[in-house]
Image 1 (cartoon, helix red, strand yellow):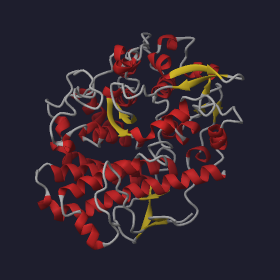
Image 2 (spheres, helix red, strand yellow):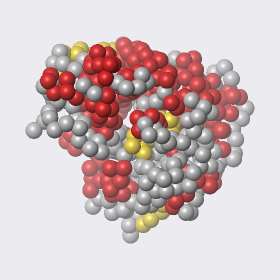
Image 3 (cartoon, helix red, strand yellow):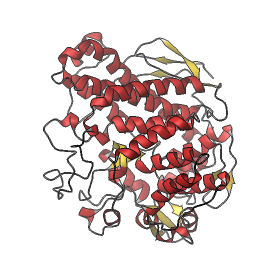
Image 4 (tube, helix red, strand yellow):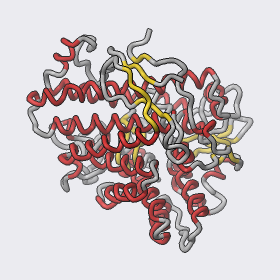
Length: 500
């Protein structure tokens, strides 16, 4: 395994509603042109988000693709199903399989590609602050770029290195902060986590002027007079003429940074700080629980399958809609789960009988051989739903799970309160109280998190962080080990840039 990574020029991928410059940005002159206006910085930052929503990373593989296959959330049973064939060896943790190796290498390249775009922004912004017409823009752009760089590195760490719990001193990944051809050596797991935390703390300070912090910023659904003309629910996330200040939950906003800090501190087993930042999000009151009537509505125009108001940050992925239809809504091509196995996950024979998530996200259908559950979380009803298509990245329920886990040792009662709050808002009225056994608590927490994060790519990371056996959909287990949890790095030095 190589001990370093080479980052080459030619890295930028700018892609948005309209092209900004008909040039290739690898030349210094063209970079100067790009960053000569605030619009150039807006386009550069938007380019990071758009790059991140491509299918090789958060527009597929790191949300509802490879990670959920590894978490045993899909049944690979149909030999004629091309998706099942694509992922069958992955489901068996065959990390030498050619299909997996290709996807894994593309994930590595894609994440570092987006990081390189962040680096280019950060290397130019300090000397270009005079181009901004609003004093809020520079710190917001810088804060978002730093937060994104930390977020992307954290997922690389969670994929390609041992967990902190297993080996904090193990060589991990290169933490790349320069847009150059300089060699970046690997840092250890602990060192990478410290770099991520420092960057997130700096981003949090830079984002203290984020509009989402104001009392007047009200989280909600798409506003009146928008693309779908939905009724006003009191939100104002799309009000005003300044597009950069709108839809802050589609960007790495202040609360998203706090939520990511809670996630990273928990990974580092620093429960005190993880609880601190989880509670900052919870106690803000900014993110309301989704109303049952919105989640379960029969009227498409009143439908919210994604629990949108609870999202702290999500990737905007309308371009992935057709891919999602093929992946989940057609039994001949879908990565689905056998009905009996899905019933086990959602405990439909017990406390899950009234679980809104199972009722709204799982649709029973037969292919003539097997009865399966098609996954409807990302289903779109034309252009009529309460919100656009989003891939969840950080959500309110995760903050409650973190708060519960971090409180259990000192106050099991309040830990169960956090746990029961999420269940109650998912239609499960049965509470668990007065249980002081840690193993029982963690087992229940994993079960609930798996239901909640189905199709979001997070449960695999939870198994890894806790070094817990993976619960197979059939009721069996896959033993926790680095062979399962640590992806092999690409064999050769990876030269990032345009590839022929």
